[in-house]
Image (cartoon, rainbow over all chains, first blue to last red; front, side, top):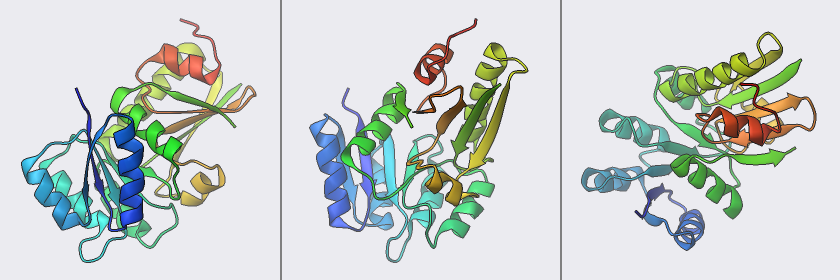
Length: 130
Length: 91
């Protein structure tokens, strides 16, 4: 069965990076350029994984995360953002409230994207010597 | 003494609690009384994650014995976890 990934990012270059990387590997990818658009898509469709940018105009990633978790506590959500950013205090708030999410750092390459998505959806482990 | 560090996103989330429990169980079963496990919440300590080049959570790092190894993903299968850390399953 084809796995479905929703990419939410206002930057077209980032959306294309995810779309290209994941569709080549056989994933079905749908993209949203805002949190509001993502919520509209999620009203009609379920996904196996959501990749969510933080810094978006109007309705940022933290607000989108909160809204998604009000009706969907199961789907894995990765916040795609650098660890140093203006949203860390908001993220701390939602994390303290027990909201489930994982984080991936930016910038991120194609191999890292595939590693994260494959591991999240199918469970095998990646091994990396430091 | 085996030394591990686990990077998670948010101590309070259900997923993080499950991951912590899974990792502790593997360590207790295989290295009882002979390991240290430090847990880093990347939301609380992003500098640590960045300095260790952690690109996503959850990640388990084996610091000792060398070589250092890091694994990312599911920790549900103890055999896979130990194998990918370069360690032997003692059970």
